[in-house]
Image (cartoon, rainbow, N blue to C red):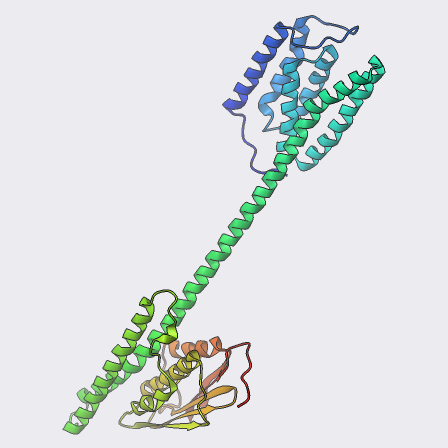
Length: 397
């Protein structure tokens, strides 16, 4: 396993190799090496050859760790045969460390096993040659320090790097999920605000536009008709401003304040809402069946907005006749039905569709149902909203 892209040979690698060469030459000059007696004790010039081979492999300890180790191993064995030097032992140990750290995981595991076997083999060889248990133990210890210890140290570092990389990936994943949650919350809040603004503004402004148009377009409108239209315009303007202020107050509330603490529209205000749905050729009536239970604020707000949007659509797109609004309180849900006459061509005028989308979303957020469409010469909107929140059961009355 590699942890990052292998770098190129750097100036630091070359300086490290030159430092090893300089140190090795000084130690050779100072006779800083072991003498195998009665084995061959070559001249000092021959000892520089293994040193040069190890130094030549050092710059590639990171870029080609396995190749550098394979290249340096024969030179290291040659140095051991002549009498191991301190500098060559350190350089070869560093190459073992680099191969186990920067190479593949299988290479590191193979080196761990090989250095264990090699250290024990050195002990057996010394015991055979010297017939000394103490000498064999010392040889195993030296081989373990120069061969096995660098490999094991590299494997520990690999483990820490692997753990750190996993933690970084986990942290990045958590950050991505948090960002997705944040964007989802922002989009949900934008959709909620869009629904609320549409329901608040569309209803009141539609009433204002219709009645102001009637004043301008009907030339023989009497004083009473003008006063009635102006009263409707004023009432819708004032109520629209009040609801806009309520929304602004909701947005400005400090964190921890319950949104329900603000005066949200309730179903007991439907009679007044239906009473405002008047047009020269259109009237509205409200029918309530069942005993109104204590409803969650979210259910009351959704039901109110669905009726409000349905009446707005009836004023803008409906034909002449009567709008019938029905609210039925059942044991576990509230059923809402609004029937309004279709236009002269038997269909609704084209619109943006934002109102229907908003009503459907309000019902879906409460695990309710929503349907809208032509039905026997009328436009029918029907919604059923659960009385209890999702996942709970309402007790029998």
